[in-house]
Length: 374
Image 1 (tube, helix red, strand yellow):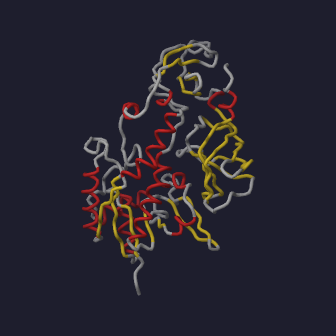
Image 2 (cartoon, rainbow, N blue to C red):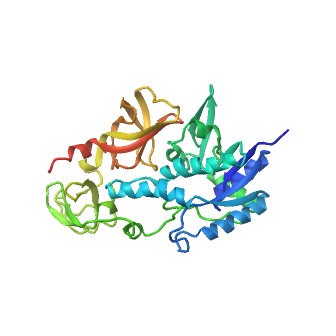
Image 3 (cartoon, rainbow, N blue to C red):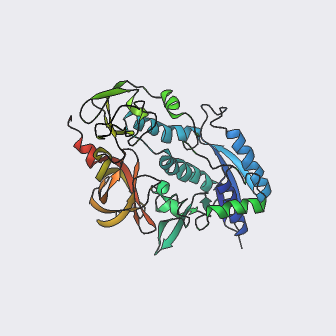
């Protein structure tokens, strides 16, 4: 009997490494593929592809699989990074992991793997795939603290039909234990953070290399100028650190104490950044949002009605009602107002453990109400 061939993305991290071992244990013919997707400053401390490649090769040797490297830097720059910069330049806050999964890991990588004769691709994501009546569903991982279905909501039926997630039913603690037991050289390696394939770095300094910007006023809802921003692209809604206006007294506290400042709204037309004091200020709360660039995993939009959704990755599922749906857009209304709903981020819809899909947040009710000068 011919074994099924799986091409797995091996990043040099512990999750993809253990995934490769699990697939081999399950009887698959496993080939590792290491993706190089960033070249601009690859010799820097923030993006060391060479070190990751050495880790991936060392793991492949221990697991007993062949591995090759492939360069998707052009595709990444054209499909992911260019859109990433366009969104920031427009004053929104994109999610590069969502873009990267849709355009690189499950498109360019998948296409290459199929050319190699693969039956499936695999990654170290914490998620699950289930087939029901000839259709494929994306499910949350059993380890709720590591579930990554949020980042995978733009996948489609063809992509899911050819994808395996070996860690979907495994706890992260078990993955670390397995890595130690197998004797993987990267068993204690830290999980990667920062921008997908670019790494964690001083973010404002990094963006400054690529974006044009203009300084402008920083105002309160009452219209008082409390500072100067360094460019709207460098701020995100709900941001607390790095605003640079600490110490100004709050009008709201009779005892004279000072609440923390938060970014609450970007007025792009007037190049003005609005800030508020207090985590629960009304300008930070939204009960309704509109999203665009919708993608529904089943191939068609779900019926309007009650579901749950996330408007950011590290968030519990929140009850909502899916309202108006068009070819490219939808609206969500929440029973409980959501904090710092941010244009450019993803609104992802769930029916229990099943990820239905989602879209890019265009605006929320609080932002819509701020179009008039206060």
